[in-house]
Length: 134
Image 1 (tube, rainbow, N blue to C red):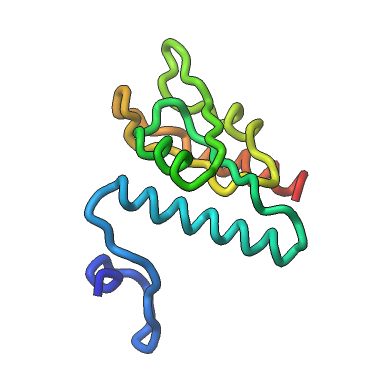
Image 2: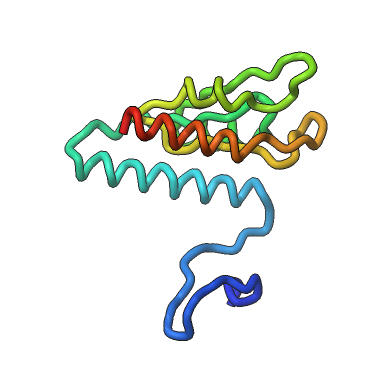
């Protein structure tokens, strides 16, 4: 019902999968758990360790990202913001990514000034790193 309300492209005989949430904190907790579980399942199938997941964010994120990391045993790797640049630097974020990274969280509306992070550049850099490292 929610998927159709938001005009999701699903066929008549298809079902959408997901969950509706009341607020962003709840959505972040559920999304983080989905990222972690998907990463763990992939690692298990590959016979690799799956006990040290990490998450990359800017230091400007909402506190619920820190709560997620603490409550669900995920290492939080933060890119520090600097004077005059109050969002996550995409290049520095990608430097923190490794095979245990479950997610890189870009913020559309920084808690400091409402600024959007450069999601396109971040995505392009992540795709480039994935080509190099697998």
